[in-house]
Length: 294
Image (cartoon, rainbow, N blue to C red):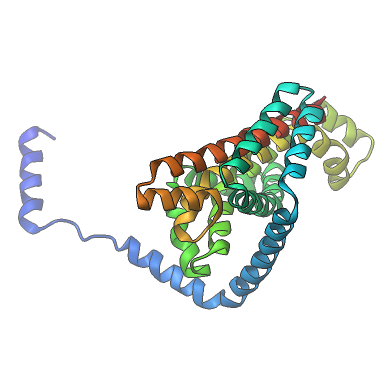
């Protein structure tokens, strides 16, 4: 087709009007409304259980004396990593958080991250196992993960609000969805990386599929799976500031409050607290994974 014909067709389209707009947003909104209506009992149960567990964990962490927690984390960092520097950093960093008056906010953030990580792992690891064991399941799961990992983090707040309203539970829900993909991907990757020779040897000895999974594939995949858990924790921590927009408290809430009030110093203090917690958790989980792999 030459350029003249293309220009003619373009002019014809302009004269007759553009193509009708696809009402994708309306379809999605109708689907969410349908799910909200029909899943109301399940969402209420999830909200009640999650809020109870989160409140219980927050109360337990708040009840612990800060010096005891600081000493325990510093000792754990040193024992796990065998590096005195990380233990000193953990003690100094958490002492700084305490000194800045952010201890309770830090415990709230830690509780939210722990609950969200637990839920993400409980859902993500079985899905990763299913994707590793079945090519059909993998063909379905992986494109969904691609969409989830390229979706802007703010978008995850949209379905959380109609399902669970504003508050901590909605923040946990959004954080779980945002942080889950690494747990699924790394579990699938770890199991699929088990050497075929070992799998064939296990089959030769007459092991069943479930027995082979539990006694061979999962132990060998454990270091890779722990790397996925580590990434899940980091993503959950990165989500706490965004989740503060829908009612999450903690360090993310302090950052969001500082943004609204233009209190730059307070915002940086809360941000430093998030960084300290992230570094401590990341280094400890990394060395736990190395020990399991070793």
